[in-house]
Image (spheres, rainbow, N blue to C red):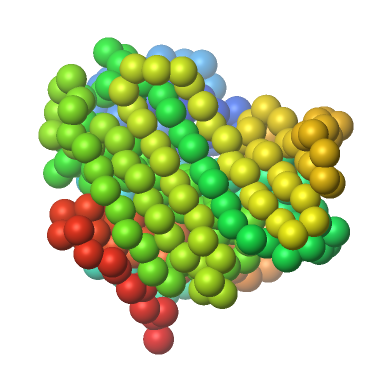
Length: 331
């Protein structure tokens, strides 16, 4: 039946799990059935809170519960393994970003999804945040003229004590601040402008207090029509910042994602009124549900998410070699 309630299991009981379960509960058409985590204390707490079953082994969960949807909210190095296993068992996927550690791992997930004929949504939440949605509509309207350039800055204490150690192990996380937060910036720039990165140069520093990942990075990139953009991120101590400034021939936008949107039409910035929007996680689940019922693509496809990983790989190659990287479109 096209509108029957679909059972959803979440793989991973970390900090983000509650946001997934709250969104599942709020989305008519989905119902949570189970959670899996090697930490039985965490999974047990989640299970009691939401009235579901807890498992230590995600394979056992999938084989016993046969969920319609598997949510993968596990460390990055487990994304490929769990996504392929779930797809092979017929589960649609809600897959946290970054999609996987490499383009080749992304390709394995995409192939598994094709063989199983399942829907996959990769959780690039930038697509579902109210300020970003409004900014994209203004860009598309053309009211500020031609886009000239973009500046994106993100600063936060990346090495804080509460960050799990696996984030700081390159083999498990894929990288540091550029892999975790830089992918948000790459995604935001491409999605807001409906353009892709065609070439880039990058540098990175490694002064973190723990782990072997980079603590800062600077990226100069050009989009497919030549529009330049910069991404500057620091994970060391300092003032927090998360702003994206888009400069046009007839004005400017300043996006403070998750907080506010500002516009200049030739003078000082003016704050635009708050926009009403559902919770980004709820919008993601509604998106996935529509794709499942209509047998259509989600608005954040695995092919798109693969592109973000391809750009990230080019960032690290450039930082290591000092050379410009040319991004080639996938045929």
